[in-house]
Image (cartoon, rainbow, N blue to C red; front, side, top):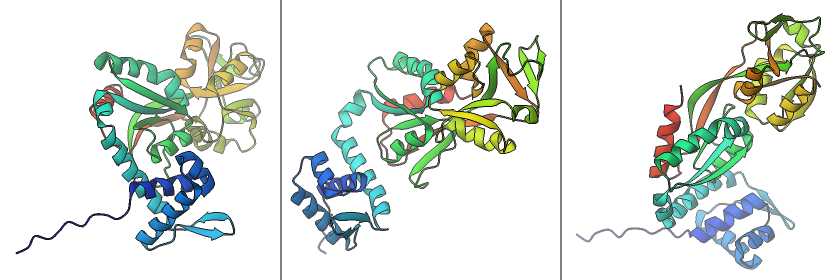
Length: 313
């Protein structure tokens, strides 16, 4: 009996790369610049891919390309295939210890450095690339296979839940805090000197200026869900991208802040800042590990996983 011949795919990596670039940039001209191909070559590759798939990926309106509903699921699969191809092509680099780590701002600035020190201790030749941004931006990079693994503060909300693996890592607590002897708390709050804590009510907090992180950050997500929903009339005077900026503005007594305990622990210990405890408010939160299921899990990836799981308690 004649052995059945294996069918080889007719879709090429070039076609997928062109499609992904058009999807991300929104035009064939920008894709041609990004891929260093002629615009006619880019248009031809897209046409060939649509013919192979027997479905449209973009709707052509004049000179504009609008994404067809078919485009997103094909984009996710194309990203996975291209990622696996790059992994195969550069496998020796992964073997040598290359890893791309993403982290949301608080984790990246205050928690990740000692974890990286442990990684370098275990693998002195490790080649680490880091991307630090807010949770929403980091998860987006994971989805696009630009990051091997990410540590984020907010609940991950990927576009495609089936492609993203997310696992609870550890618990953190946000703290409301103020400058010691802040003008905002004089005559208002009950100060516990032995614990360096002010105790106030939700109603009292609603009358005070509050500095918070920007929308999209993991810290702001928890503030919205666990604090601001109880304060519909709160005087939130500013949303700020950097935790350090909030800390310095609170030190200047512009208002109260709300950040992770890790961000302000040095100033709390020195007595420069004080915790403001609000009765009935729990600001604990979960930190998450996030990675793309199609991403190659190299030996250094597993080593890093082992390290952060040891620190997960």
